[in-house]
Length: 239
Image 1 (cartoon, helix red, strand yellow):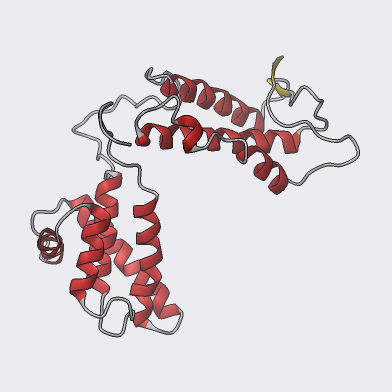
Image 2 (image 1 turned 180 degrees about the vertical axis):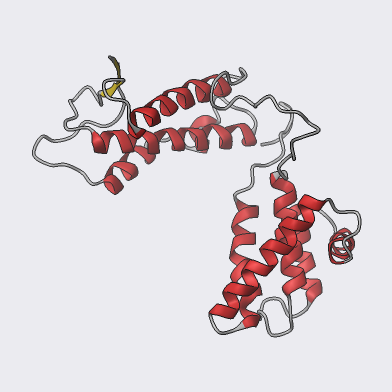
């Protein structure tokens, strides 16, 4: 039997809810300001923080399943009776191992390691930046004059997209033209564009207003851009 320890000490007379455990553990995740002493690059700090948050969520799950937590932390029993949670415990252990290696600039060895695939047989997923771009292009595609008071013209949508993605409005107009004419865009990119556009339109139609599609997608585009991991900078760059 293998034991692992992590987590928060609890009062013996009170058992926190999963939400309370999550809040307690996530509040202990180092802030960007704290991580700045160790990591110069803002993108690195964001990656470390998000990996730590995922580990905290996994810890909270196991603390909630544990019948008792001592003052020294959580004891997780692994391997007595294999089930989905014992397998999740294995996944958690592997994730923490790889996260620690990545945090220290070493390559992942276990679950976060890339798979060995045949390039001729495997379709590569779209990059995060490409997905962000496509979402903004769909917004421009869905725009209409009554869509949103903030965006009175399609040009204003392109300006917002340019600011969010780091491209020019002219470039974005050209990109949208490529998608609408199905030229100079890969099959995977076209599928992502039209599938997402159709899904949003269907949601708007179900809600009773087909023209709501723009408003439904706008918050997602904003969140996607605001949460995007910035491009890596050199050690001499301002972060």
